[in-house]
Image (cartoon, rainbow, N blue to C red; front, top):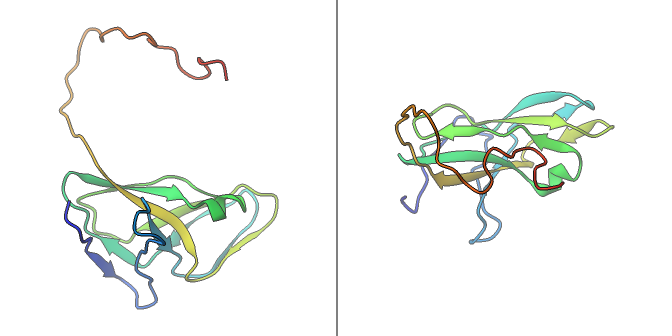
Length: 141
């Protein structure tokens, strides 16, 4: 991956993604507009930016701990390398009180990771492992 990420401002009010510290994994994404979320409600918050992720990479939208502490949860998000539209952040208010977000407030983090893209091949069986098919709750918690 190159050391620069091309960002297009789709709105003059948009804030370019930033890192608080040079070794932070995620780029902070900012709210373009103020919003208010009632308890149990969700919305798509605009960022006003588009990115050009390099081929072979994916952008993942992740929570910021400061918003999660208030009960605001991002509902994930995958940004494919070929996508050039506006990045939207799906937010849910999991708290019991209304939550406001100011224009220009940091909403989420953008993690950029290399991605494997193997072709799919159907098989009659899978190789065995110690875990096998043990899933949800299989480790005792």
